[in-house]
Length: 502
Image (cartoon, rainbow, N blue to C red):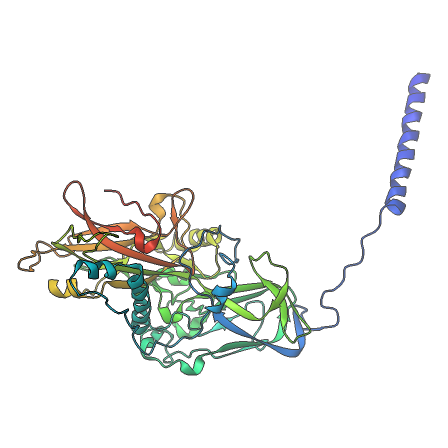
């Protein structure tokens, strides 16, 4: 018994001693935390404390970063750029660019037309470069500008905290008319876009949501027109005039009438997005005024140190797709024409499968899927992936006209980060058979179509669509082992391999 009492006393004494030592270490051996310093000390704040009132306004230029043809960078975090732009790319940034005044001049033909040397030159890299310039001119001439800024919203600030000048106005009071008359609009008075800040957010974060106004209800549309938000930056892809909200998708109707492909009453079309109203986004972080009447900060996603921001560069929230097709060619170094299919032509080319919900904020895939599950899935039988275009109005040219018409189509596709091959974005290539002697259609027009995947190839072999990228695709025909004619993508134009199953 005595030994037990003695052991207990010793333990209690050691515990008290240890506690005293621990207390001494806390009070004397550890330096207490320094009081936090307000990074905005010296600046006047708004009444709610969320914004800083600048002593003098700060004005910056805004432009749109060029599309990228090749980009091997990994996906960034939510809201970050897909990649950081170098000096040469920034130098090619544009804004509110008007339609080119003249067609590009083709390079001089050094050979007699129809000779083997002529066709070799016609399919050379030199002529390809001219074709790309011509495609750009044709796209502008047909659709209008794809770098136009028509409205700009900064969610971290309030009305009156900033002012934007140089915005391209809408053609009429009806918001839904955007894009219909854009190709003939004179935008030369809007060759520069600037933003003047009178306040900055206390968070040091500036998010620029451009061309993001949308209808938030199906009825009384113009009364419910407003920019998207950081919490709900989602558009309905098949008609990007509408935000992806319950009130919109619950009133969406499906049509399935005779001789018309199933579509929706939201007027989805082959182009999906109007080139003169493409949604765009940019984000700056660690923003603070400097002593040069400007701001310091860095682009979200950049590992660069904080530096002076001289211009704000926007990224389009969609990718541009340019599809060309041709029926004969000369392989490099060969004098023999290759024309394996002489009784088919490319009749129509449309977007195929694509996500039916688009996020203005980049790399927002997880939130996009959650929003679809909450809003779209139970509402109106709206699939996450739409797999066919609305081609209710078809212009059937003669065979001769179809063979001779310019072989270029442009459209825009939303980001897509598939988890399996069946979810990849595709294009639909419709083909028609004809009699090469009489030029008469054989059988049913557009008797067959192929759904061809495309995009940036990942390490796992799947193809994803990345925003602000330019996908250039060249189509040719080939004969399959069973004798059928099939289109395929040519590596020489896209600089990437595409395996099409037989």
